[in-house]
Figure 1: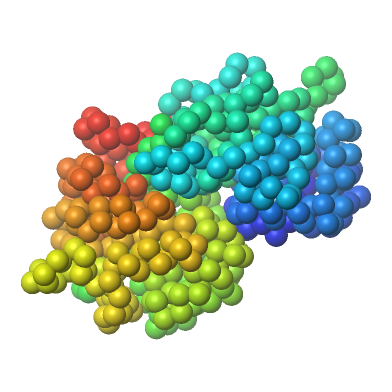
Figure 2 (figure 1 turned 45 degrees about the vertical axis):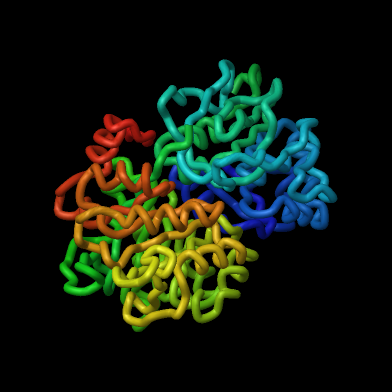
Length: 206
Length: 259
């Protein structure tokens, strides 16, 4: 299994690479190789921090390369800000457009007596049919650290409750995203990454 | 539902886990990588490795320890001790840490918090505060003082005010250690923890004084802590994260039980 991990200078990639390699993947990193991304077997877009950092994907031409790979059917996984980028945008950086694969926009958690950011281990209410979250049972937890989140829509693969219900995972064919950090979520997280690495187009016969 | 975190803390000296009482009298408590893996397996939600001598000694041993410890660890991993610049932080992240904790250096130069946050995100910056209250002070909680250099020197800042400034500068979490309670196993300083937790909008990790399950129940309730650090309670097989969490769950605290 080959995975192309995209470095757009939004945080540290060590943990993501370590988890992918632990699962036997051959992980390569690029911050600008458009050919590598266009032809990638599968793509992981990690990312922590500010949504504005995704501007670098546009500036380097990576957005177009990722779009081409997705159109070709390459499995794509966005993690944290990498998932938010799949939407049209985020109120964290309104001038920055996302990929727009999912129409909605990400927004900050509503004001409440609860703390923002949402940091820690929370559970997933997995919707039936999710291939990414296959095997994740009730009572399993994953690690979150974020202040912005995507809304619950038809493409939501799991719902998590914090202040309000939000999309903790999103999935449409080969395009997947998780708001939590599977690389930091113990055995549950490794199972999810492993599902992603094993993902094949249905009916592809392989 | 968001669970309360139990964080296993490894105080490390020269590449070995040690445990002291009120920051002195160190006893050897094992290999950091082995200890971290064991805690994660038994359900610790996070591992913190604090190099308690790093302010005074070299960095190479620490980076090697971080690398070895991070290798097979798939829960959040925070490293602190002697991080004086964004470059120091970068080395620790490269070695496999997810967060760094800064203490003395951030007090000497508060802009360090902004600098690390800008490069690695707020979620990667934990500001550790060593707090001591003077029981004779007029308002021991509000007047609690920050100490630096492993508790050796007064920083000249009040705890609650410093926590608030740290948040404004972009800290992602506060790790609050009560020096009065540290290693005493008589319970967390719930009053001070609650005062800090109410003053900031970021998570507060309570530290210092864990000795029994009810101390955790207390700090998550009355102390309004989002997470609690346990060191001595786990060492020498006294209690595991698993048994601690099972008891917490029975006491009505929402925790992640290990599979």
